[in-house]
Length: 276
Image (cartoon, rainbow, N blue to C red; front, side):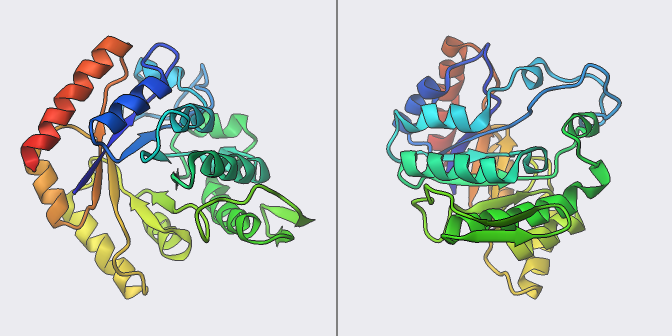
C-alpha cells in the first residue's frame, strides 16, 4: 500500500510548498488537492446530504498554481487533483496548464477529474448540469489529442476546435495519467474508455470497489490502479481497502494553520509507519 496526503489547501491553511516539503520528507508518495472555483452564495445543492458546507470549501487555492509551488520544492512527490472540476474549465487552457506543471515537475502529475456535485457552481460557468458528463468525456479525448499530437483538432458536440499547435507537451509519455472520480455507471464507463486510474470516494465500501473492478475487467480493463482519497487514519479500513485492490490511499489532512498541519502530518506519519 502506498500512502499520500489529501487536503483542501486554502489561504488560511498551510502553504503548499511547506506541506509538500514536509510530506516528501516523511515518506509520503503523493499530494492530492481538491478544486472549487467558487461557492455560490445561494446554493440548493446539498454537500454529502447536508446544507452547510465546511469553511475550507469557500477558500480553496487554484489547484495547478498550488501544485506548481509544491513542485518547486520537491523531487519525487506525485502531484494530483482529487478532483479537478474539468467541465467547469476551458479545455485548451487546462491542457496547457497541466502540461506545464508536468514539465516543471519532471513528469509527476496525476490529473484526477470528475463531473462535480455543486450544480449552482456549474451553472455560473455556463454549464448545463445535465450535460456535464458528456462534456467531460469530450474534454478528456480532446486533451489527450492536444498532449500527443503536434496538430491536434477535435470536433464534438461540446468541444470543437480546428487544428492547433500547443506546447509544451507533457514530460510523461504518452501523457500524465488521468484518474476518473466517481462510482456511478457513467463514471465507470468513462473510466473504462478514458481513464488510466480510478478515484473512488473515501466512503466507497470495499465490496463496491471489488464490484467495479470486476466490471472493468469485463470491459477489457483489468488491473486499473485505484487511489482512494480522504480516508481517516483507520487501520482496519486500510486493510479492507488493500484487500479490495486499492493501491494508494490519500490520507485526510484537515485544513489548518502550519503548526497544526505539521503536527497532524506527524500523526499520520506515525500511523503509516505502524502499518509497515
